[in-house]
Image (cartoon, rainbow over all chains, first blue to last red; front, side, top):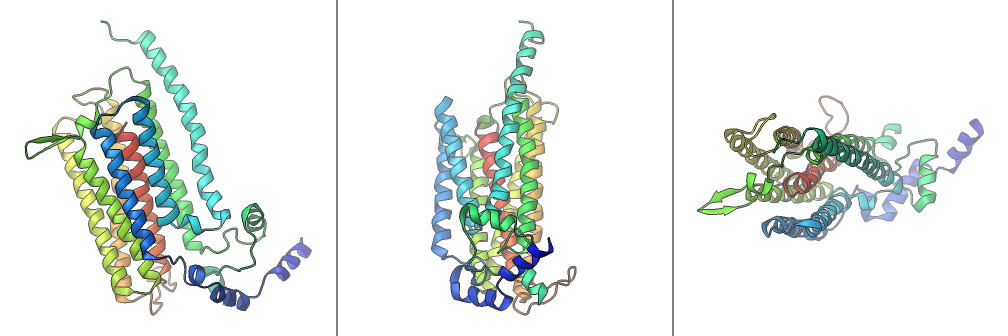
Length: 133
Length: 240
């Protein structure tokens, strides 16, 4: 164990080298996340457009699978833009990206379980508790 | 010296990328998040846990709605407003959505100006963000008042499935609380920016650590998350 630690220690560049690298690599990691203002304005504009689109889905009373696919599409696009650009996830190292984005994906398993569960509950209610007509 | 290395890490150009990078970072016997400070990493982990909380709320709402045999109230009609004689469906929610997205935009710009060490613009943009957030909470209070006046309670409502009220108050209430806390912290940090704490690296009264403009980005992460949650609430609760 100690050997490994020492070995790794040797692999690490010294602190001074770190600082030098940071200056050399320039813009992005010199002082945290630094990107052109224009990028934020463009993303902002797209978020407005996408929100307007999802509102129009309701306004024009679209129904069925069309409504669902459009709502989910606009939702995912908006969420993606916010996380990737506004929260700077697009520029983070993959170790952080996967640590944060993978667990919420696993919530989908929970969703699937509850879909089966509520279908079952609904069936039982229809069979035994349906209001007398 | 050691503290500087921990709180303000810089990326080394030599680090591997892709899967090799993930394996290297996580097995390096040090910090897994190489070029991210502890403050930013902890905010991300907090947001992840918050994601689970909101997921559970939305899931319980989904389960209630899918399993009930009573018709669910139509949100398009419940949240409609009559403005100037016109009956517009869901208009209040649409305006709230635009207000929150605008606040996200101003926050992103504040973070950008913060890293450019533009004290005035950062503080002003943060205060604009806070004002938009307060507007959002105000509109939510109006919405709650309207629904309560119409007889919506956590256990009953005039239009259909009784679980509607419980889901609505729980989900929007928890989100509104997040926005409220966000506004409070925005104002607090905007004050520090305005005073120049991060230019002179003044120490915080609570943590005694040197203040840095990175705190604006960490604040921004929280604020964008609040906007992000609203995106999902808007889609699942109001548009379904």
